[in-house]
Length: 105
Figure 1 (tube, one colour):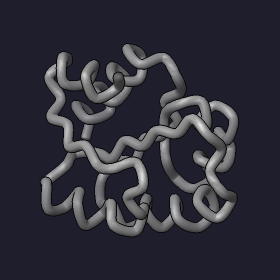
Figure 2 (cartoon, helix red, strand yellow):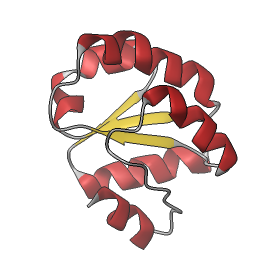
Figure 3 (cartoon, helix red, strand yellow):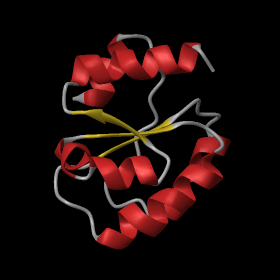
Figure 4 (cartoon, rainbow, N blue to C red):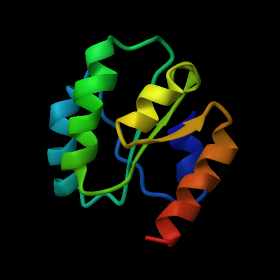
């Protein structure tokens, strides 16, 4: 739903498979010339994902990293500590927040 809403608001969307390893995302983002990375999760991710893997993704991405979905609300502190921005579960608000952030970059 987020990808459709983002596309309708003029953002170019590159969809990856749900099980794409986080360590591959920076490579894809560079090749696709992405302005941001947006992740979403409903189920709680393993702790090493939020602690180590997300921090590594943020440091290697070269673009802002946003995290949405129910897991982003539950694990807000860990996501922020990793350097990503939480956009929550309100899809229209998340799209606008990301659009605003990209305009100021």
